[in-house]
Image (cartoon, rainbow over all chains, first blue to last red; front, side, top):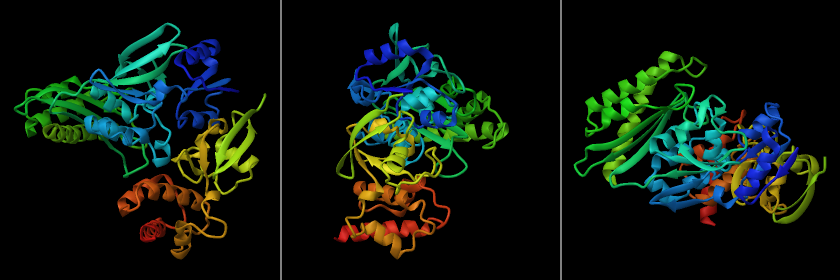
Length: 286
Length: 158
């Protein structure tokens, strides 16, 4: 196996193009190196993208933020401005593994590993984040929800990789939240995850909302009916009840050791409701 | 397959080694540099026994390639005591009997040191969450947490 650590996106694209599927892109490695050891992947080349400045930086852009795909969770947590504007994305990124994993694991990796239970993905989808993908045909910008197509599968074409995420500008009275259910308090994988992003008008009425659920379908879901249940309300109990019902109705979960289908469907409503309440409370304060 | 030549800094000392791409930093530390303080527990990033810091950032060395250490600053358990003088965390682990078999101990010490560098006065909850990626099958964690909080108190006093 060869190891390359290009310092530009163009060089990384050229390397990937020359190797095709025989190369793997290495960011934090917290999934990839486990797969390598298990023999699940046997690449001929590791392309380490962490020396490319664009992939390792958090910057203001167009009134929002651009986050490099290989930025580690701990770096996201330590970015005070980002945490203030997008607390939900930061708390989601910070639920991926332990302190040690946080030192390496990235949102780009979390997205491209394409686990239905990836914590940062519902938060990014709720935020309306765009992802910049680069490949032999150049760059394209697509919604985060268009990347994962099933467990472990993505829409990335051969030779493509994720460069960065773009979070939109924050109007006044807007905030987000991410909560998940796990059977204990730390170090587990979501049974249900919910990301909610809301904007309020000057009177405290929800003018825009996005709701996304993780771990209840082959990919993270955008739940438009849950968002509609909030829009035009002040987030009263009846609106939150309707949101919870819509969230449960959207689930297409599996049974596994962490929870049955019925359990996931019920908990999705509970967690979506709590997440929405948290996002609303935050939005009222900013 | 040609080996990679890596120049790095470990516990303040310049170090050079040759490694295969497949070798993790933990493999290099233990098998080639004979620094066997860092332990391999799970080899999948779940147990924290291989904890080291890279440029001050706490990581599992089983999930880092040896080649990635090029130009970086690595700190391991071997750099914690200064000669015969134990680090306060090490002394408090002894005082509180915060270890039994000892396999997890280097990882706990490196992780706890990293915590106290960022937060000299952690709450018990903060310490427990920070150390949630370090598994101990002997102590039940309570003695470890007491040792870390006691060491933090002593380090604040001195």
